[in-house]
Image 1 (cartoon, rainbow, N blue to C red):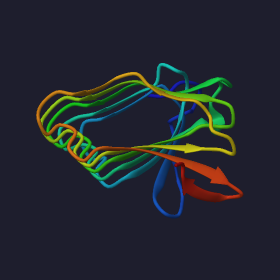
Image 2 (cartoon, helix red, strand yellow; image 1 turned 180 degrees about the vertical axis):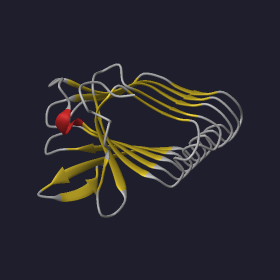
Image 3 (tube, rainbow, N blue to C red; image 1 turned 135 degrees about the horizontal axis):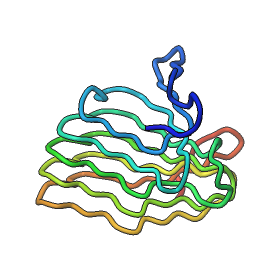
Length: 163
């Protein structure tokens, strides 16, 4: 769902097939998001992602802070991968604008293989901006197998791992 006039009425798609949406209050996919690429600008700090059984496997979801109305905070209240393979091998990337505290209040991997090989990536700008992940819940054995949290920094247009 989206907020604001015409925010999601006509999603734009660039030449490489990325679907761009702005003022998004939540992203919910029950099917068909597999192997898709999304560039989302969350409308507020209550933003959430929810993927059901097999819905978001191999998807790339970029949360872009450049269009965020909150100058200080950016992120997701909840990322819910609820069902078998819901976010299997999915990459969820956070790209805040300078100075924004980036947060995830809660990640829920609610079934076997729900978040297997999922990547949660933070692409920070010139200086190390604060990151906070409050809770990651792996409901069953194997829910979060090989899941990764990666932090990168962009400096002079070059993206490098933050060590």
